[in-house]
Length: 312
DNA sequence: AAGTTTGTTCAGCT
DNA sequence: CAGCTGAACAAACT
Image (tube, rainbow, N blue to C red; front, side):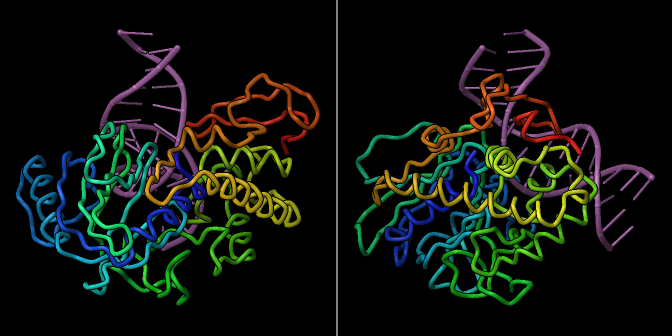
């Protein structure tokens, strides 16, 4: 369940260890963990063989390569290859993915799907383990393409180059090149519920189910209000609320952080935050005391205060 | 033991 | 083509 703040904490944690580091070895334990990786070569007919062939292609093309500085847009994280311009290791954590930095002698964590051995100029010999219980996350070696607006691709990115698989993702509210008016107009063009629009990463990125509920609670908007019926004033307030929940979570996530032990996962991260709406069904609204309501909406649970957040 | 939960992509509509 | 809906993916929970 990592959303933008959790992914950003991981990016910051990986930066010192990976920047300038060389991949001395790599092993894909579970071929499903890199389903985003598209082989450069044409592949076999059987899906099973195809997956293994692509896993081998991933290993072969990454071993011996050197990493540059990690970057992020929304929930997508990538590490450009310093010695192979135009390519980056791309990762998405899905719902349960973790990128763990370990020393060579540390015991295995659960669900290690891909392991890389790294020689880091700062920290010496390390392991980078991609762990994922539910396998919705994935790694890939991806090609870098130009950003649509010509600005640097995201946080940590120096160049206007973004992995092809993340190029359709909209900028997130913490991105220096994020535009409030572009995001507002994109939201107001849609007839779908405002919450559903927030979860669409092509309109604005980084927001998942939890922070969507929190930001809507903060700005007192009912999740099912059609996006095009939310006033400009309210949309502006909503964008400010998203900023606020992101910054707060980022500040909290960043404090308990150790460069050699990147272990930020959804669960422990969110537990540390004080949530006002998400997961608080039947508990009192911290603002007015009314019981928080939970509804199933677009195949997700939505939590809101029926008094503060009135339906339009 | 079937249902719930989560983010993204894609097929298939209007 | 743009916008939208629903299915699919995986596995640990209850």
